[in-house]
Length: 64
Image (cartoon, rainbow, N blue to C red; front, side):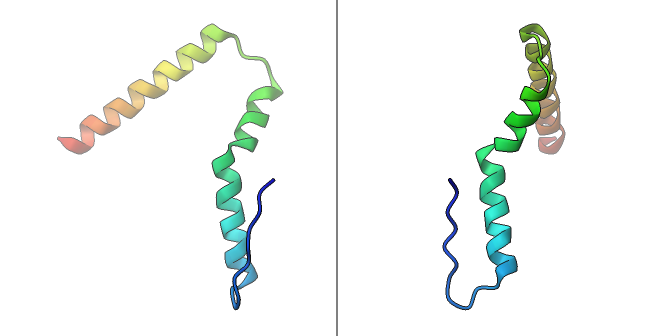
């Protein structure tokens, strides 16, 4: 369970923004979406490798 302590004089919008940020960090929605449909291990591995290559290419472009 996510707990957000609201500070004195803090607006509700700021507290809600902190809650959303904390909630996203937990990865609940990401996991929920991934469980919607079964993905074979080979497909998941292929997707992970494609993502790693993409990130690696982005890092090479920014350092050059």
